[in-house]
Image (cartoon, rainbow, N blue to C red; front, side):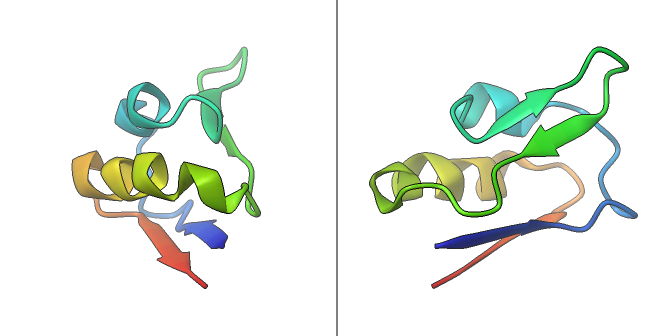
Length: 62
C-alpha cells in the first residue's frame, strides 16, 4: 500500500492522526508527517483517514 498526502492541500487539521496514529502524526511544529508505505494490516485505518480528511489531501494506492 502506498499513501500519498498532497502537502499543498493539507492544512494540518490532524484528523488523520486520530484515525490512523500508526501512520500519521503531527511533528513538534504541528506539521503532518506520515509513513508512505505502511503495512497492509493498517489499510482500514488509512481508508478511515482518507474519509475524515477535510481537504481530501490523502490518497491510497496498491
